[in-house]
Image: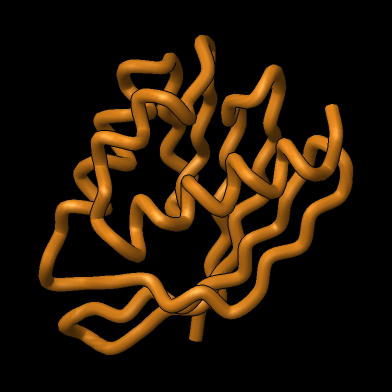
Length: 112
């Protein structure tokens, strides 16, 4: 897979959270997608992944500030700051894109 395709998918994925365009998730998430969130919770399957990310993007009490995105082949590293009522948390997502869709999202957060 080309880095251009990965970069486009990840750009559109980030737009879901920046613009709260949750309907775009339907075109971005692949079958068998696996998410491991920053608390270690595992979410498996396309429908479950879409529901998980939709709930985060629809939360108007919080938002993500993108700090950096790095693309390498079919993988991406997204560095972010999650701003919420209690302050903010910094972290990264390690993403895997196959056939133009996200099939893995592993989230890690910096703790204080």
